[in-house]
Length: 103
Image (cartoon, rainbow, N blue to C red; front, top):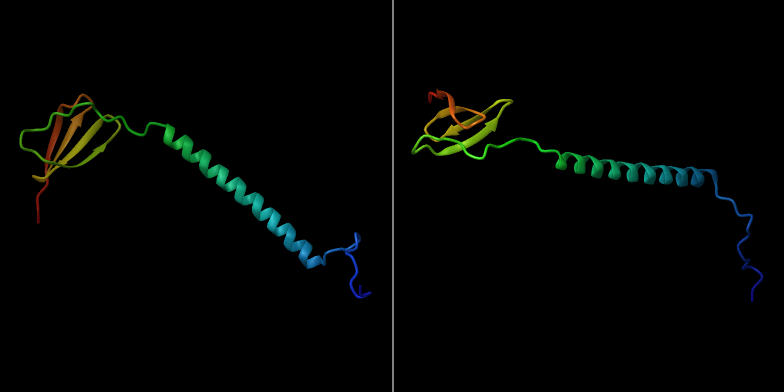
């Protein structure tokens, strides 16, 4: 066996730049873990909260084809293929009809 090969010493110390790099990697790992946990918690909270209250039934005039739907605080709006916007009450009855004029 050669005298050039020495076993590693217990007193070996990393250079300052590597110590700093190791600290940066540790901090980055901790921040990433906290970030992923935060995103998961926010998604779970958001997905459990009911977003809208869709009515069970809506009274749409015969022959009207619905192309879009939105809801407000106490009303629903339905856009039809006939360029009409129907504003409906919470119970599904028509409150107002708006005719959209094409250009």
